[in-house]
Image (cartoon, rainbow, N blue to C red; front, side, top):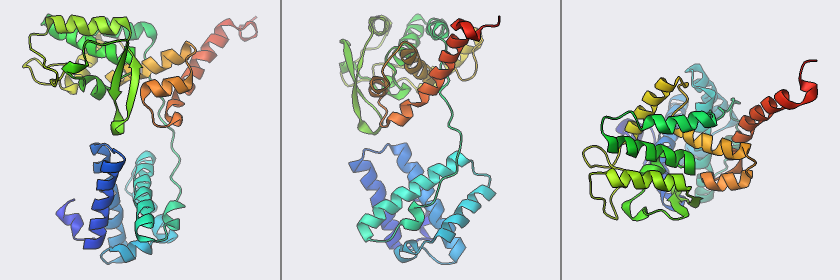
Length: 314
């Protein structure tokens, strides 16, 4: 918490905010980046109320927040060109804080909780075509002058596409995780555990990498190593993916994370069950996974237009 922010709220409110953040981290396993965003968003809200009312915001003033206050805050955000998606995120953080305050302090959170977030169009995942995903894996392997690094990069991208891993999950693997069996235990966002199947092609890709890696990898060491032996930096995978996509003429959306999107979309296209895909991706909510159905509908319409007799011109 910044010194500037601490001047505009009372010690009691400051302690409440800190306790809420610590509770979210300890009991809910909230990721550090999310904790930082929560703190920033709620402090920004409290700072606005301080300026708006001209007084320091302790617990009592926070309990008196009205519908008019919430409207003024939302108008303030829009006046500063805050994107609708960001406004929705900030409001969500404030609501979470007030729900916790209501349980802990017994204050009435209705004015806050009834505030509606602005509507915004959710960005759909941008998967690669199947042939492009395969070409990405092959081309990534050719971007380095050192064979072992090319083999390493190809193994990482293969795990993203073959297992639907996030880049942080792939680079979070340790020496003890190998050799892979038929399945792999992954600890994802919020410490949530899931089991993902490992295709033979993924096992072979990692095996080939380890055969050429010049560094000893102990049980607690990062499985994927940088050129100097330290843990592999995810920015290097982003860079090599960018080089490969430019060679292949793929759009800027062809990122490492797009390989995970491609994994989900291609499973859905092949008739995969949405619930099963949710489990494989480690999504906490099915609504997150349902974004892929919109992508799949595009695919289905193309198939329909190409094959249905009434869709073809006479």
